[in-house]
Length: 159
Image (cartoon, rainbow, N blue to C red; front, side):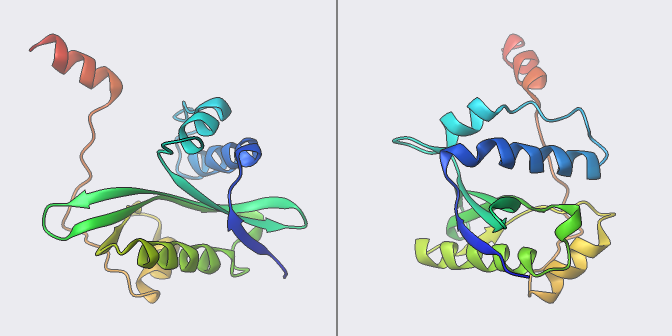
């Protein structure tokens, strides 16, 4: 299988959003995606992009993405967060996921980060196995903590 990994372009965001929605369905959250193509275009491109995205193309169709952004660790310093690594279901097992992860690792190395973080659902054993085979440590004793937009508003209202 021939594929190309490249930096995403603004006009790729419709296909990127399609893959984000595919992941939401896979993760049993089909109605959770609120981001729009316009959000992705505005937030990912311009003078101060919020994220960097790599895409995997097969026959001019985007079949995978890796979306990352910079963060900072009080213990380690510069870090990179891999928000999502998505490969379309029909293309899993073709090497696209490995190639995208390779690109993320090279990007993080180029940025001089001390750590690359991401989350994986505890029931997604194929992904956990994939990441562990690549040398990642899955920290099962940590829990992800989030405050939703409604939670933020409620919190602020109490201040």
